[in-house]
Image (cartoon, rainbow, N blue to C red; front, side, top):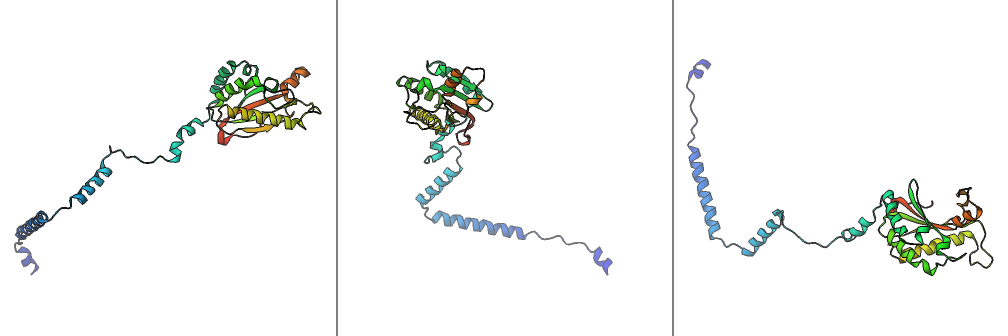
Length: 242
């Protein structure tokens, strides 16, 4: 029986139904086109849809929005970046050389900082923390030189070991050195320096670090100073001390 069925010829499938199905799809498409042609299109809603799609899909479309606070402060953020100390040393040297008072100071490039030592006798009254009237141009020039510096800046006041005289308003050398650093910081801020300054008083703590080959008079004159310390780190990452 199996052999008899196997020998019978196979019947080919009838594909005539596809014609009927195609006719049905054509009629349905015609019906929906007819319905659409008789309907009323909401012009305003359609235009809103077109505009929305155009705004999303058009890459050249420009839109406006309010600036964020961080974007408004972009120039200040850029200006606050730390500057390479080797480059800054050259800029500072040129600024200092233009002022007769500042050129008598000492600019030193150390391992991780740039230090400008300003002798107290150049800008302060003897034993006092008030600035000379003639030192105002020097403060303006120094503030202009530091205005765009984003590095951490500290002011450290120093003094000699001699105690203040009896009629001095300061009870100790620490008071005097700190007061001078504060006055100098205020002068720099008034001249245009826009960033916070770290202010310290060291009194005569650095007196022993001066060269022993100097005379006692030179050592005392050099010890009465304010150091402007510019570090490699930015304003937020600076450390205190020298």
